[in-house]
Amino acid sequence: MAGGEKPNNRKRKLAGIAGSVISLAVLTYIAIGLISGRGAWLSWVKGLFSSREPVEYADEYHFDVGRDRVFAVLGDSLAAVGTLGIQVLDAAGNETLRVPVRMSAPAVCAQGGRAVAFDIGGAAVWLFNETDTVMSFDPAGAVIEASMNRNGWICVCSQDSGGFKGAVDVYNDRNRAVYKVRLESGYVLSAALSPDNKTLAVLNLAEEGSRVSFYDLNSETPGHVFVLPGELIIDMWYLKSGDLLVVSTDSLFITDKNGAEKKLYDYSGSILGGYTFTGDFTALHILDYGVGYNGWIVALDEAGKLLGVIRTEREIMSISAGAGFLAVLRSDGFFFYDFGLGELPPANAPGSATAATRILALDDSSALAAGDNSAVVVRIGS
Image (cartoon, one colour):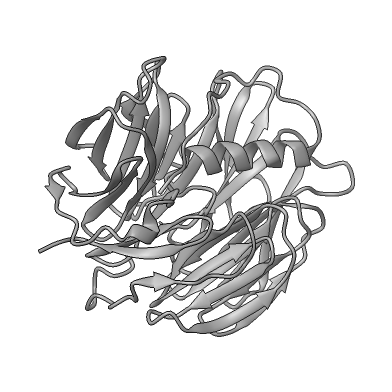
């Protein structure tokens, strides 16, 4: 998953957050998109290539989907979603799918060979694979977020009608609606489904702070409710163990459906510059307050064990973890690290990638460096 973009200074308290659900959706888009190691891409890159031979990607890709392009790995292909629609190119750079649709704030989430694309604040979610549009979902209200678990089950968060604060619809891997949540309080922001397809975690904003409610898909009422007062939960996803990994403005921690909590890394007093995650590895980019681009990157395993730390003094624009390596896009070039944060030499630095603003890990030896007008592959040297 599942690279991030440079954040602006952002408020760390929930006070003053008000307005319509669409305003909150835009706030969430900015918070997740600008902070997230998954980026505005919302692309869940989770070690897709660890069990097979590396794919030989082309050196350059030509996507034509308008502005605000976001990217995801889709099987052996690359998907791009932009203001003009959806496009998929195979490893050789040949177009295999094009869906012309208009979007204002495009986003995408991918798992294995399927992906969901959506327009934040829009009215539809598209499910597609490398060659076909499988179907589209039409929630009751404006789309806030969509996510997919490792089994292909989909959660769609939307503004609801009838006086509710929001809704979450769950679809199984056969694209059938199997569960629905309607929130009477607290604006819904995102949702995640457990690896066994049994527990739904719903993130929303309430007066007391960020709130995660756990729902058993066999029950209509929530079980344990986890509340984090005074700070904003930015993102969450399920680990293979069934625990929920949570990123907030102050810390990285895990919790489960019964409320047990374990803090893995505390960065309160600093700024979260970005993060990225695979199935068993998390990297955080932390910035010192008021010291330019000074900060550090920290690497952790699934249990929270510290794997490595490196100091940074240059602007870091994006980070993305692949199968066994971390790709980092800095203002002065591309850099690769192993999971212990030992530096790996890049094999090439194509001139057409000098305007890149984001990076996306591909297989175990390369990453896609993308800007407004180009998308090229940078490879790890031997």
